[in-house]
Amino acid sequence: MIIGIKDLAKLLAITVVVCCAVFVCSLFLNYNLDLVGIQDEITTEMGRILYDAQLASGKVVASVSGGCLVVTTVIMLVFYVKNYIDSHGKELGILKALGYSRLRVARHFWVFGISVGIGSVLGWAGAWLYMPDFYEVQNAEGLFPELDPQFHPILSLALLALPAVFFMLLAVCSAFFKMKCSVIGLLKEAQEVRISASRKEKKELPFLADLRRSTLRSRKTLVFFVGFSAFCFSAMTQMSLSMEGLGSETFSWMILSIGLILAFMTLFMSLTSVVKANTKTIAMMKVFGYSRKDYSGAILGGYRPVACVGFAIGTAYQYVLLRIAVDLIFADFEKVPEYQFSFSALLLSLGMFILAYELTLYYYSWKISRQPIKSVMLE
Image (cartoon, rainbow, N blue to C red):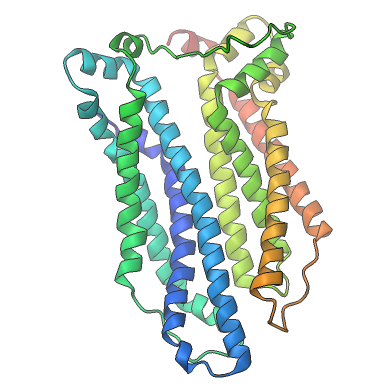
């Protein structure tokens, strides 16, 4: 079995997500470890308060952002493994027909974990390049002794080697269980469709409405990615715009950059998969005279409510996270202002989101209209 460079290139979104996760965790965890090493040298009352606040905030940021990004990476990797098996079912079926066991075929999927290894290395290297500036920002008040970044082998092992090994094993296990179907099923590239026996017969919907609903139901993972992209955009932009007095300008830009990268990477990945999965349906709709507005709305329009829900959850998430930071972590620090929900940040973020999302949908709508019918029907 050959997994080509083009197949691995599709994992760019995973590399970016892992890079962001390792970058953030490397900065805050390394700083926490170095800060613990000088705790006996911090003698002032304000220094002790800031010391406790810095440790707590580092743990919160690393656990919340790292945990969220790890879950996202797991879902994305499983999705890509499933997508590869669905699109290469005939080749995999032939290998099983020739006597190759499931495990023998599945073990080749370890290469999908390479994308995680690359992302880990890039994130770790980027963190170390930025770390001296980050340490200066964290000690902007001058309440700590001079602190230089120290190398911690255990932390580097945890952020570089362990994620790559874990996701390589995850890719192999996912492929092993996904190929549990029969050889005939793989050769026919059959997709299992489950219909609930208890579901009552519903009133038949118009074709376009039914197509919009079935597109969402058949690609539940992509629904998650669209919602997650809106969540990242909402949470990170509002958080960066609302952090005046709560954090440095550098930290706000870092949050904004990571949020926008994650948002657009996951959105482009999900919408590209949606369009690719519905190429034949779109071609047939063109043949029968449906307009660009009809097939674009049916295939892509159903994701607008999902994006709105993701944006709303992101708004609530950033508010709760900042309230925890102010009320619990920095409660004893006098210079931290009281946090209030910023409606101006909400309106600005919402305006940018609507513009960016609608432009993205317009681009994919244009891309669909440019798709030649003949090339699709000859596949």
